[in-house]
Length: 337
Image: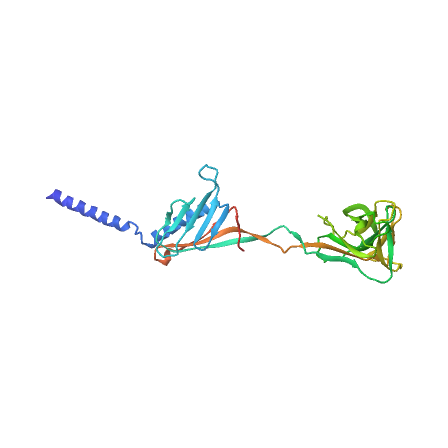
């Protein structure tokens, strides 16, 4: 009887212990359990995303990114986290397009917000469309300038450029010319960098003009320059006509009257094959110069992902919601502002 009493007491104590232990077992639907599920999933996302090198997809409920090779095959790994937006569906994790594994079950909330920083890209410049850079086209007070291997007429010009111009180039020229003599001559149509107020020796473009292509009276002739060099805004240019033989190869039309003073466009001549030059303020060839002007492009930016803010809740209780910010150490570029 004494033994039975003792056994009854012991069994009662054990039953109480078992009952207490069963009540201490976590309920999978409790707030702490749901919060733990959410935390584990967020920690897994953070561990992957921390090392992301590029972003493929980034929406409120889906994120696809790559990380450095983890399998030893030399190929980066692609990791995807996604939720269907249907309450109760799981948050899934996929690696390299494989089977989707459950990162968190019974998800009621999942939202990603992306924090970025803006970085200005290096300044670039682009050529505009072709424009008229300089001209003179008047019919009164015209005269002839004859061209051979000693007598070189030309035109000094300084284009008016936009204040923000970074460079400019000559694409084509037009001027009035005609035959002088037997129509067998040849003239070099040159663009030369100006040396002060007169042509220098550096030729930046050249075309050939055959006298046989000219008329017996003045007409417009045009020459285009292939791959013209870009010039600084402060560079000045001269159009120079160079004869290739002692016989006169053409005449070009000069317009105006000589006056004292300086101007940004005027006729220049040499009678000793470019050895020295004379400037003629007030005189100009009848000419057109076309070209392109380069100006700065609008500033463009790239956007780098710095952090991802994650809200995640597993289970129905709002108290199980967790919110965290995940640092993305490599700051991969994204394509949206």
